[in-house]
Length: 497
Image (cartoon, rainbow, N blue to C red; front, side, top):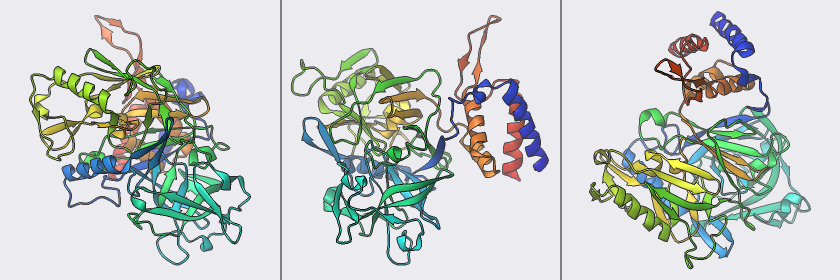
């Protein structure tokens, strides 16, 4: 195996110098960029996975979470605050706290500002700060104890305490502290987090807490600004409908990556005292019909900026009920020869027999400066073996771009330039191969080079003997690429050994 790995390294080194220029460019993936795996809570790798449930039952549970947990209460004309129930999140990641390290499985949430985990002053599955040599309580006079995004108070010992409220009347509180964190192969010093000693109803001991990726100064993204530039992105695989998808991971990337061609971007809109990521939805096209977003109370009034939020924790995309009903009517018109059926889960309003929908209508979300096409699996999801339903729901609150619509999109958050980028891709491509490289002991930077090279492949097509201009391909290598045989043997030999 050593001989084989050496041969592979030599071949790729040659390719690196002569054939794959993308690897040599520092702006593709910088040395400080790192990634982590995201586990869908309904995948077979999740502690929430119930072997006794069918796919339909898991989907019904996800839809229920999406309906009940993401309640956005309007406090004034421009501010929305999430009331997040404990089991709201859809994606989990492994992260370690303290020295010695204590690994926890935590929910990621782009709508939350605080990083916090369950703690204990006694022996048990939760993190015990007394056992860590790098745990430091935050003092009351620290700038971290004066964040507008979380409630803080001062204890009798002059240490900072936090409190986080949840829908249903439950809440979590505890001490604000700094700690050494290990994430994605990196050691991160002095990360501010909440150490909660209160047992929160609905939180299981099998996972650790919440990793806030919001816009506030206490989110993990904001705290990493000294290590990586203030950017992060993710690529979410579709909802796990079979054993293959259930074993794969989505990706969360901190730092800068090159999105390449066919990328569209829309401005981020800052809302007062909101840690959500707001964008502006201008309209939706269904088939050939464009439906513009208008003010709900006055259609002639200028559209509000930041009228939609991106939420990785919401399964469904939600539109203001007036726009939703126009979209539903347009879809019915495009499928007027196909009879609608009732949702067996009794949650969605527009469903069809899957085999009758030969061609789903083309649906495009028109964000400010960016048109994002929804493919069939972004707009519809399978609720049973025979029935598909529209993955969009009406709401009287702010609109939400949910994770079903975001699947197989590389979504980038550029907090420095205040923009969101989208690029259509296949989030399941090369996942197994890159995992094999990591398992064999190849370094993070080396794997990043290979990932960049794979994602930059181009090809052209011969039409009547004349080649077209080159275009980027989503998966695979072009014919004759010298990397192909090495990759084939790597997968076969290493994983069948």
